[in-house]
Length: 255
Ligand code: PEP
Image (cartoon, rainbow, N blue to C red; front, top):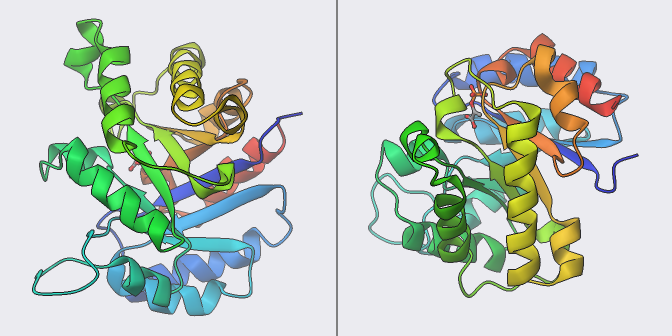
């Protein structure tokens, strides 16, 4: 038996119009009706949050934003605030996703402000970290992940382990079809847990959930979830289809 309840997120990235998102949300609501031992969170694009929330509000599926800005409001064209996400029905928000870091150039100090703002507003960050292929090949995985954790979570206090979720997403495994082996993932997850224990407390470090992300699919989900320190998944491509996302969740739940 796992010590921590699994949490599986579906990051829909910039896929799905509101009507397409509604269609998948309706299917997931039915398919996942009996799944209670896993927390399920889907993160549709911003325009789909309100209609998807309408569909899912009486279900066991939660919704999350894919990003936020750290100001409460103002002249910040194109940005979205924590309060807007909350009002749209979000309980979670993805922060520091590798596409935000590497496509849009987000830095650890900006990610830190976002994590702070999410927590201040009662949103649960799904805080993403992970190394590039070059960094892994140069033996820098632990150094990079440690920097991302220390800087991204600098000055942050949490009261309860459920206030924060960390996602380890090696950049080389995201959207590439290449997955970290369960051993590779477990090794980094264990390291992240040590860091969290040092930053917060042993007890919080033991309880904070750490998701794995990077080409998770039905064929590899169960083996990844069977590892001691892997407490769920953040799924991109395979979450876009209700059948494959459901399969991942059910296979994980059965571990
Ligand atoms: C992601 O978007 O966080 C992700 C892990 O994508 P994929 O599952 O497609 O690799």
